[in-house]
Length: 440
Ligand code: IMP
Image (tube, rainbow, N blue to C red; front, side, top):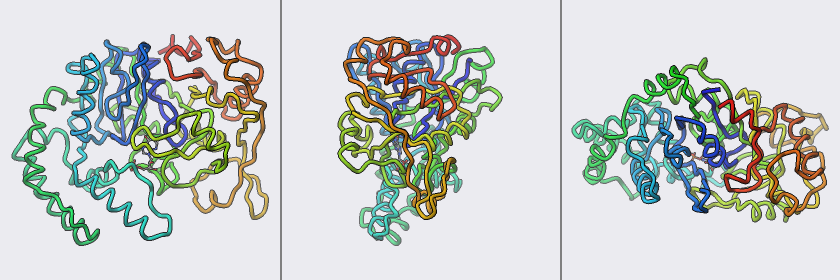
């Protein structure tokens, strides 16, 4: 199975970083295909050091792995510079191992300003329309890309072209900021040109034709992992629009975000957290606004890796994840943070929804906000287990009976096997079905 996509199957923060880091050991390439520094992929190394990666693929901590940032990613060069430094300071070689598509678009300071101004305006309107973005400029950068006025990373290599494009763009953005958003904080075009022209030399070693690189690697039969950021239910097309991100985290996004054919994809692994979380606004059918939700937040350390915001928490929503399984062709699931459910007297899975107006049963997820706003989850309940019962376990067969019952129910509800089960943050706290790793 040389080409494998690993993607989030809920609303993000499923623990994709750990799974990619784990599988990367058997891979030659790890490639990010969408999103930007809105992502926060947490990796815990065997020596206990913990790192949060926002842009660099989660394979970077394996010395032999090449990492690719594809054309579908939007790159904040300032954030990337900091991240490269963080990884190098940790003693890890980045030059010669990190490759960036020359077609990837850039996030500029004005994108972040517009992102924040837009959210502030929507919040002020008082009708709950703010998306709750990460404020990293993701939406406005993709807007420019699709309006065909974005600045691409290759533009950094030509100082004159960069200055010309920045002047055109900043004129327009200052008009928008001052006249529409009533902002006094406008962009200083000459300062931005000075700040960004230095990236020509800094980024030059990394920029290349990553589509060609990856296609060659695939043709040579190399093992390639395609790392999704965010998740299926935040997808611009298939998520709970408009409470979504502005890219395509779903499986199709891997092809367009990297320039590889759909026929090259061998396997899609969906990462599913043993419960649900969501940051930002938007529908969340199984949200728990009580002490159980608070307990999940504390036990799972559910605070945004990028923004530090507390995450909304709730039970596993099998209706929503079944939808993610369907639209992505997920054939294999990596279940994460199972340990967080330990010591709870009762654990629930939402298996269906019920329409509140007439009791109609809904078995298929919908992104229709009206429908989602008028349903209640129907749960199946399970008995819990003690945290101590998970200690030292390395095989699924050795798990306590109550855990096995819970896992069997998830497999039944989702219609896909749990090939990886994570019971802690460390690489060794993972039960992996060897046939999966062997086939990578
Ligand atoms: P944006 O991607 O910053 O535009 O934010 C759009 C929505 O996606 C907001 O609800 C964010 O909280 C959410 N979001 C973006 N990136 C992540 C992530 O990596 N994990 C979880 N939620 C995210």
